[in-house]
Amino acid sequence: QVQLVESGGDFVQTGGSLRLSCVVSGWTYSYYSMAWFRQAPGKEREGLAAIDSDGSINYAYSVTGRFTISADMAANTLYLQMNALKPEDTAMYYCAAEVDKTTLLTTKAYTYWGQGTQVIVSS
Image (cartoon, rainbow, N blue to C red; front, side, top):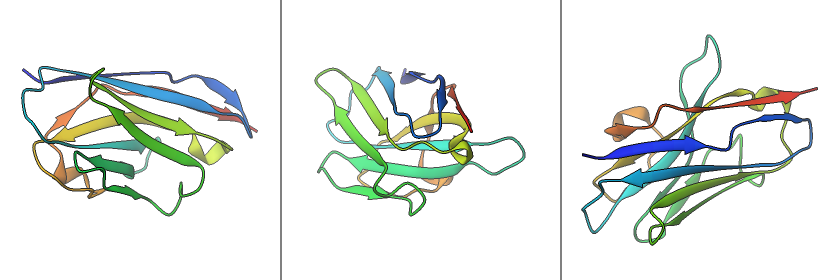
């Protein structure tokens, strides 16, 4: 059974940094697609960054240059380094996974989801 557990969310001031982690358990496949999404109150879930087992990476325009996705599958962990945080980055952040090789940033592309970790950026 695949499970994803996020951590690292926190309260941070504008301009600060955070690193989110997502520990993946039960993954028995030799390839993967993994991604980070976020959802602010009253808004749709937004794809931020995706990575696949070939090393292909895709970022949403809104986070390009500020966020970095990486995966250490030896440690079964997905990361999202977030720099230069803004109040509009405040949201619940989710990791997602799929048995595929894709870097799509749509929710329909992913079957497995974590429960989320809260990020709050104060102005």
